[in-house]
Image (tube, rainbow, N blue to C red; front, side, top):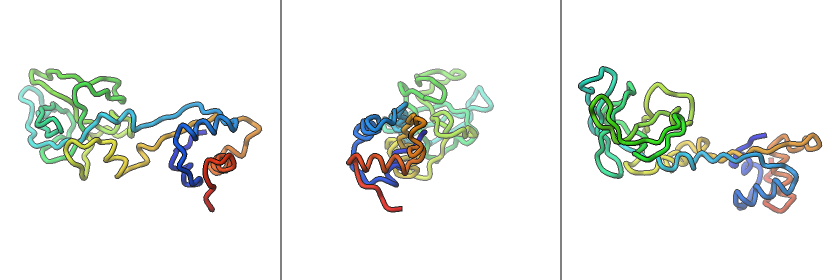
Length: 194
């Protein structure tokens, strides 16, 4: 069974750390099969702003964009149809691993013009299957970490997911309420009223 840490905390009032919760689950006989922390894979992405965009001289579907980042103005070649001046975007600078395409971004030439990063779509960052264009943020300061923006504006996308194995003798643990009850009984917090 999979559940998010915030869902568990909807039922359990606790200040316990993630490690304490994982240890307690295992101690209760609920084997932890995995923990996924989306914030870890998104930690290196930053917010940028496209300050200038023009058509690539040697390609119909590419745009040469000047993007303001925490490292100053940088040039990024982009093929997204919505790449244009004035939008706030998510930037992967050289050296950043992009999980959705399983690639570490480097400096490269695209049709003869150098590109120093990538502006990302939701699919490239494994946030959704959306790939109609790059992410356009409604707000955000240049240079801020995207994961911090996401935690404030769409926290479900960076919520920790815990997966546990349920044995046949533990049907009470098939719901997050039962798991919260077990953790409260173990002294890891207080079960919240329904």
